[in-house]
Image (spheres, rainbow, N blue to C red):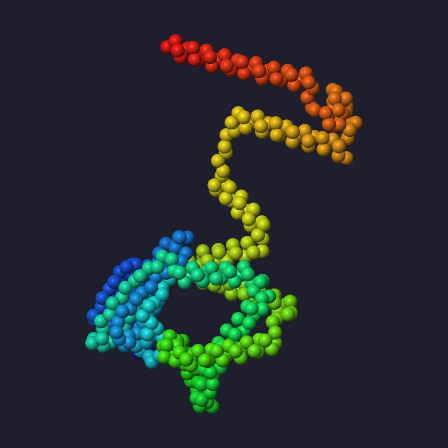
Length: 402
């Protein structure tokens, strides 16, 4: 009997899933696509993963839900089947999600992963909405986040020992901590005693934090003076506390602050892109450049020369002669220095020479060529010039003969 009951339940589940699949429409969107819906029920909008290129490191995609109603439920997942499963679980049981995305109408998605968004509306009266997908090739916020992360990592040593940075962080931390303290005080007014009441109080405290975060802009606009005075008073109190205790003087504490700033900078660089392989590579390069700047520069220079070798320039005849004279003088100077150094054995050197006296004069500063050799070299050069001129004259006569 139990066996047949289980089989019937499985068949019912299959039929129910089939009906949902037939009734639900799936749309695969690309950048710039727009879909208009006027029917109630569950609709799924998916985006297939894009190819990863280094030029797309700051690429982002956003699904915009344009509707005037708040009576809808959103589901996110990697595949349509995951959306169906979440929808079925939500329909069968009552669930309360504190951080529900039902009020979010701009949904950031990872362009390099398969992503689906399910929109479910029960009422046929308010079922109309428009879903479109937009692409941002270079997200300015992500690019700024990476630049700030690199600056924080690179200058963490200076920042951890700067008094101005110490007071600024102290004031920001004091204002933030005062807001958290107010939320905690608001949660204390909820009656407690049992575990259920304790969990409810914690949930309400988180809910208050969420409401404050979502309505920050509205609070600043409507209660501008109160917010200004609150920030001013808390900042003043934080500054006085920081001034009372003074900047950090312990070297190990400064080192810990430096490490914390560097970790925070690396985290910002890593999370500045959905292309996590590229952002992780940026973190590795940043660490290597910071710890081994000279070695990394030399390796990078060698790799650059291998990939983009320099084009060799051919020397002219005049440049060739000048280079020969320069290198000859350099080699003779090195020879004199070597023979004068303790590494050279003068007696063995003398035994190998045909004219030791001439070599000794060269070591004392005389030229390496004799007057006879210089005159002979000049005669050879003059004869070469005459031969070249005679050859060119013959060529000119031949040209005129034609």
